[in-house]
Length: 222
Image (tube, rainbow, N blue to C red):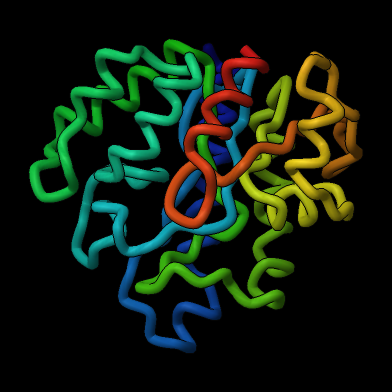
């Protein structure tokens, strides 16, 4: 119990540092940072590139817990289709306009129950869907590495080719990778932040990605 409390305190301190981001202050970005969240020592750490204003908790003045995809039901449907969370819960979530605290709490419980940790490489939130600048990615990669050292997941799911490249330094063509590896259970153990963690590439789960193929990959991994 004490170890868990210590890990949570380490994460809290890390996210306080992130909230003092020099880039957001310089650009007068009013949106709040979106932190990582989920089970400590998870079986899967789901990593995406960055959050956007569609996350309810990014709004200025929001005082509750902040973590990825609060209010974005399409993402949770992909996790449900992939077998990572309860399908009834994933499909019962409302659109952003009708999202309430009870829905946030339902997703929290699913992350813990299924030993998942959800985060982004860049915690800065933007009012557009474009990728962050390279300098911001590089600056915040140090925070992700610290997050990895604290959480120590068994496996990493890298959503999108950019995330996979940032984590491993390797370019990947997802269609070619999964054409050759769709029946394989193993993943290469990459040295990230000094940890040998298998990194499994996946299609981005919403918007510019491929939700159906992402869900199929998650089912295969499960």
